[in-house]
Amino acid sequence: MSRWNAFVQLFLARIREFFREPEVVFWVFGFPLILAVGLGVAFRNRPPDEVRIGVVNQAGAGEMARSLEAGGTLHVVRLEASEVERTLRLGKVALVVVPGPEAGDACELKFDPSRPESLLARQEAGAAIQRAAGRTDPVRITETHVTEPGARYIDFLIPGLMGMNIMSGGMWGVGFVLVEMRTRGLLKRLVATPMRRADFLAAMMASRMTLVFIEMVLLLGFGWLAFRMVIAGSLGTILLLALLGAFVFTGLGLLAASRARKIETISGLINLIMLPMFVFSGIFFSSDRFPDAAQPFIKALPLTALNDAFRATILEGAGLVSQTGRVAILLAWGALAFYFALRRFRWS
Image (cartoon, rainbow, N blue to C red):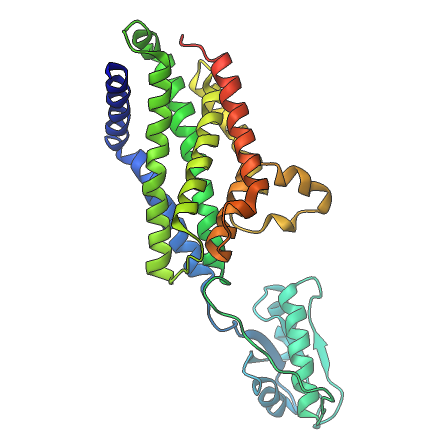
């Protein structure tokens, strides 16, 4: 009973210490929400942007401008011939049309083929000009626009932010704090007390894993309230995945801090471990965009497994049984990290 009481007191001390540092609270809880707001608004559902194109002011310009604007996706500005090169060079328009003097006469399109918006303008302008000249399309095409919750960018983003926050919190919240305590001589003093070393390390990791609950509730609740995000899977499964992710990254944080004796050293180690996962693990875009040759390495990263598991659960309603491969990857990383961390850890 006395040992359990010691663990509880150490755990509560870590929680109090965390909430006494406003800047840490902001980076753990506030920053992910601000990031979600910014990216959610930037990639919100909205009509396609109008493409600006120019029409040279000469005979036939008026009729050409009306034909181009009929589709509703092109915004036409009238230009003098002397302004064409400068306007294209500065990117003020994506394409310039030099109309023929009469309807149906050949016209010239001027654009930079290396610019994606210019290629889009070329396609839209060419179709509009041909339709105005009486082109008939032999095949009727219908369009279905998918804007359902679950298919939007914000639905993809929130699980990635959850994984990123669990990784950052586990690595910095355990690794950085332990090295800071070592440099200040606090670890050496604690070892001299009746405290059990295992209780101290367990309390450090448990306090970090407890904060995962708050982070998860904030991000999922924000996504549901602000963007009507649909959570298809079980909250219990999401919670278990979050705890498993916290177990992995607190273990990696402990491993990184096991021998480091300087703040600069632990900062470099944490960044070295986290950087590949920031780039490859699909936080802001799908990891499937990388070449097939890199996929085995990417899929073996713990953050990739965690993000993919979150998205499968939240967006598709998948359970833990259907994700045994991802769960196994996370368990393997966590077990190995703790094993080597505890063997290598030093208190001074």
